[in-house]
Amino acid sequence: MIKWLKQKLVLTIFVCASCLASSAQQISKLQMTQVKRGYGMFIHFGLNTFNQIEWSDGKLPLSSYNPDRLDPDSWVKIAKEAGFKYVILVTKHHEGFALWDSKYTDYDVAGTPVKTDVVAEVAKACKKYGLELGLYYSLWDRYEKTHDLKDPKPYVDFMKNQLTELLTNYGQVCELWFDGAWAKNDEDWNIPEVYKHIKSLQPNCLVTVNHTISIDGKPGTTRAPVDQQKGDKIRFWPVDFRSKDPNLARWDDPKVFDHQGKEVYLMFEHTLCLSNRWNWFQKRGNVPPRELDELEELFYWTTANDNIMILNVPPDEHGQIKTLEKNRIFELADRLGIRGGGKLPAGPTNLSFKMSAIPTNTSAGKGQEITNINDYSLETYWTAGDSTTSVEIDLLETKAINRVSIFEQPNDINLPDGFSTLKKFHVKQFSVELLLNGKWETVFMGDQIGACKIIRLPNVFNTRKVRLNILRSDAIPSIQHIGISNDTQKKYRK
Image (cartoon, rainbow, N blue to C red; front, side):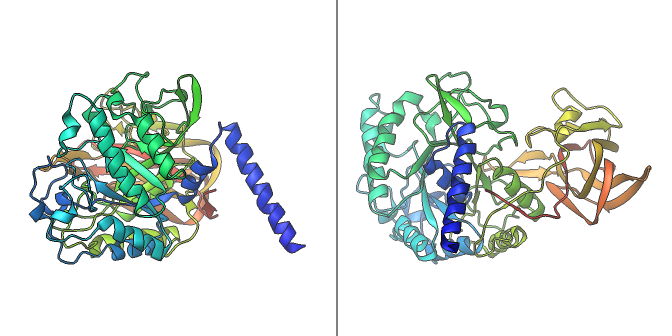
């Protein structure tokens, strides 16, 4: 009887979930497997790791790839301990270097001093530790000669041959992540033929092409996630989910898009760097990882609304994940309650979305209005009119709160590798006040906000109004978002 009740409950939950999906326009069972995974570790490793570069041109010597302590097993073991559900390994980046022994190129690990098939070792470790395996494959190949032929067919055949190796020699692959499509005309990649080929080998492998959504259906254009609307036209088809690195989707991210007049449901998979300098490939010197508060808030944001987050944790030139970065993803796992595994949490309900926000001085420029401070995007922001300012948020009615999160917008300073940035934040002292019993009471004072500051109050307070005071700043400050919530009840992603 108990067993029957459990089965009935599971069936009821499944039917309810299916009904919800249908009302949102048919998310498929296969897509739901990706939503359930939710949180993956991205692994960039290859020739670029050894040459202090993010993109290379296919001319770096194979001899430069020479890890002296290569240990892919440890990468996946760390991923498991950090609560990731799967890994996505970069098998070939834009320079064309393959991390496996490919019959179709001589620009691969077989021609290096360390001939280990990294794809095979990561696949084996995934089976060992119970994680799923995803693969990244760059469409753009700056080494392969057929890539630049006027006739696109020989290079499409080359890709299909390499994909056959990847999809037949390493077990089940849950996702295939295509990148670099900007290097040719969209149609030259022949995505329909490539997609059909992938599904013939692994029907349950989900596929995306980076920069998935177009601007008004125009070839070669990309609509950023912050601007995507229901019914926007899909740029690359067929695909199973959307991607557009390094951007963040809106909290009210749409899911239904258009392909030739047909509505299609596509989730969004975010790609984030653990490094606060936004480098994908590891550098020789230690680079600070993102702060824990920022990672926690970004996790909640990027996994909301059936979306997915993959966090890049790149091994170094020894073939090891740095202790500094390993410790940070373990700290994040502890804060999320997923160390070693477990159900992924959902963030607390944000009470400040679209609420009235009133500054003490005006915005510094068009497009940086005060409404940006609590809209549905983390890619918009408000700029104050002076180095000291206050913002008052009116929740319209009294709410119980105990948590305030603040994102500061930095000035980005470009670094020599052409990708990495140094973030310059300006706030040096701030406070948070609540309107309690008709009086403003200071509940927190702090120094730097930085990328993100989570303020956890020791008690739940009933208030209608919250005020952020920027008391000292070394330049005009900008704020991306202020979130207000009550996290006394733990929530989980569905």
